Each structure stands twice: as C-alpha cells, then as structure tokens.
Length: 166
Image: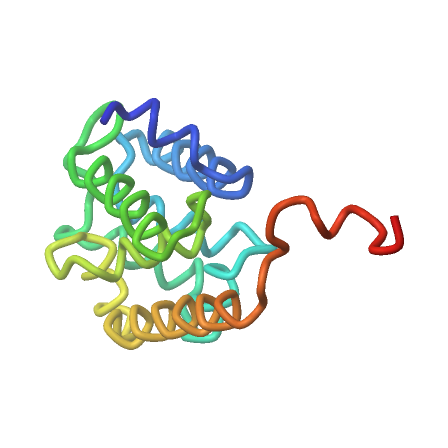
C-alpha cells in the first residue's frame, strides 16, 4: 500500500495535525519524527486526541523540554522519518481494525502509544504519563463506540423510504 493511499483516508483534522507536525519539525531544523506528531496533537484543539493528552496532563511545554534532551533530538534531517511512516501506517491499520473509515487524530495517538520503541512513547514516559493507560483508554472508548453501533440497527434496503400505505 502506498503512502498516498493511506493519506486519502486521513480526516481533515488528522491532515491538519500532520501539517502542524511538519511546521514544528521545520522550525526545529529537522525532519518529521513521532515526537513532532505528539507535539502537534497537543496544539490542535477540537479532537479527541487533544482532550486525552490534556486529561493526562501532557502539555506543549513538557514536550518542548523533552525534545531538547539529547535522546529525543531529531536524527532525521529532512522529510519524514521511517519511524513516523510506520506510525502513520499503524494508525491506518488501527482505524481499519476498529472498522473506522477515516484515520482520526485519536488513531494517530493510539499508534504513538502502541510501540514501546517509538520516540513519542518514550517522550510520554519521560513526562511522567503512562502510554499504556492512554492506549487502554482509547481502545476502551473505541470498543464502547463499536458496541453502541451494534445496538443501533441500520435501515435495510430502501423499504424505509416508502409509506406503508402505498
């Protein structure tokens, strides 16, 4: 699957997050890596990921401080890192796993807190939050939404469009 195919499924807010992460990386004179995506999620209001990060007291200032640490400094000079490509692909797969048609910001966050080797995962740990708890919170929410979807029957055929008296 090509990178282009993946991006077709990204929602408007997810694309905005990616654009913001690119701007953040550019301002730091580096390529885009997973911590830049995490940073962008914390500064893009109006999404579930933004709300979850703030519930866990993960702030822009904390991420900015972590990014100044040697272990979190960008190793990618231009473009998108392989790690971030993998993160985006995992987000796409996670969305599909939960039968979601679009990749939303919460799928991006779920992807960041899934892989213990991901730099953003390590940044979250450094800040003092538990990525596993965030992952469980998102997965539980998706499971609950899926359960509700199963309870609400969808109309079958187009019989519902006609008046029964006809």
